[in-house]
Each structure stands twice: as structure tokens, then as C-alpha cells.
Length: 221
Image (cartoon, rainbow, N blue to C red; front, side, top):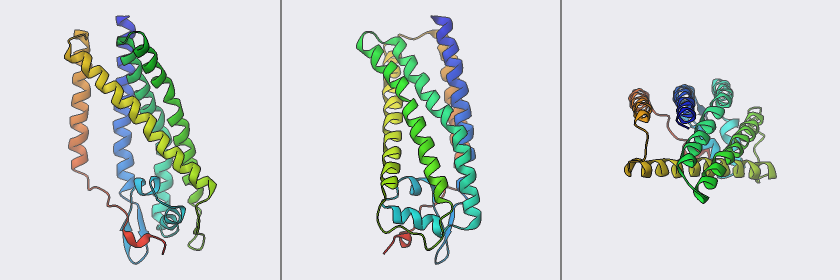
């Protein structure tokens, strides 16, 4: 069991490291997102994911600069690379927690690990929907939410709900076992690597200018 556990820790470290690297890459690309309505205004990927209406989403695309569309397409393509590592990492985290559980706890976390396939699929569908919006022109702004947009909203909400549930439950579960001292001493090296990578990630992120959010004047009147 120790050998299996160590191998899974190594897989998690790989997923975690690649995920952090791709996150920095995605953030660098996202700094080039701008709309050109009444002057240049920046927007983030979250403005697209959590657009309140389809008309608001369409207007972001319709008034985005040509370079922004190219950068957004690039962002979505890189995101396809990001997905297996983030959801795979969460699944491994749930699996690690399940190994320490008994009875219902074991099956609960094994279920959470398996469920990470759903946000992976939802994320692919979400990105595919956004890819289709890249061809929008200024006159193609929806006046009412379509069924496709409502499905898109469901994909976004379900993706975050399942992924965050797996992450939060696993982190708190493993933290509990660390508090009570039921952990392998040789796992300390993996924890040290993770902490060091997080500190390096935060240090690099602070040196980057954060992207501003979309301004209210892009709302459809």
C-alpha cells in the first residue's frame, strides 16, 4: 500500500506542477483581453463564464478587438491542456483521502474522485460554446437567452460545484488526518514540494499585473 500511495503522490505532484505552470500561462494570455467600445477596456475569462445574460456575453465578443479574439482562442486551446491536469489532480486528491477512510467515507471520496470526469466534460462543452461565439459580429447580439446559453450556464456552475466540492472536502479530510497524526513520515517531502510550489506561484503572480474586470457600459440597454 505504501508503494501505491507514493506513486499516487508522484502523480499528484506532476498534475499540480503542470497545473500551476499552465495557470501562469493562461493568466499571461488573459492580460491581452480587451473590448473596444468607447475606448479600450479589459475583461477576464470570468466575465465570460459568469455573464448574467447571453446579450452581455455576445457584446463582449462583438466588441472585442481582433487581437483579443486571437488571444481568447489561444486561451481556450491552452485550457484544453489545463483540464486533464486540474481535474486529474482533484481526482487523485479525492482518491488519497478515500484510502484513509473506512466504510461510507471510502465510497464517498471514491465517488467524488470518479465524479471529476463530469466537470472535465462540462469544461470541454463550455469551451466549445465559447469557441463558437468567437465569430460573432457587432450586429449579432442576442436579445433573449437561448437554450444553448442556459446549458452553458449550467455547465459552468456544475463544473465549479463538483470540482470545488471534491477539492475542499479532500483538503479538509487530509488536514484532519494530519492533525491526528495518522500520516506517513515519508509523505512530508511531498507536502514540502507542494508548499514550495505554491509560494513560488504566488511570488510570480504578484509580479504580474492583474486583469481588470469588464466595465458596466458593456451591458445591453
